[in-house]
Length: 154
Image 1 (tube, rainbow, N blue to C red):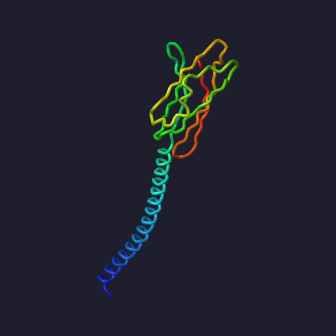
Image 2 (image 1 turned 45 degrees about the horizontal axis):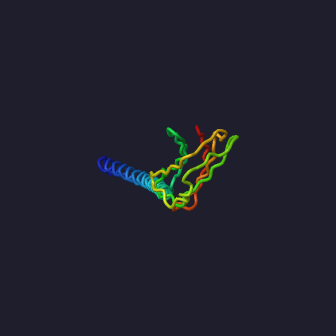
Image 3 (image 1 turned 90 degrees about the vertical axis):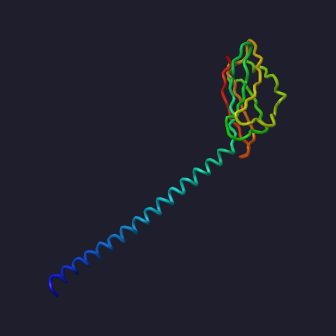
């Protein structure tokens, strides 16, 4: 074997080594890329499930809104789903009587649409409590829901 053949053999050997190393590195990269893609897919699936679950829930809140001549108990649906069979109870959180709620005969409300609200005037008197506990309950496509609120009557 002369020097030219030896140089060619060495270059060919180096080429084979480079090809084998490239093959190993490519295989590792492909496995890592597959793992990353599986993780991304799992994250996207989880996000999608949360979105679907969120779309199923109404989020009804209660607050006291002061008006010129009286206060009102305001129920608002901040969620993306309809709230059905909406109802509430109030009780005194401090000393005193519970203010009278007008229009309570509207309950249970059949449907409170997303971003809709319903107001109930409160008739307050001397000696009424200043803090109310309101328990709001409703049904949405995810089932029965309820939430408690501590509300200040001013």
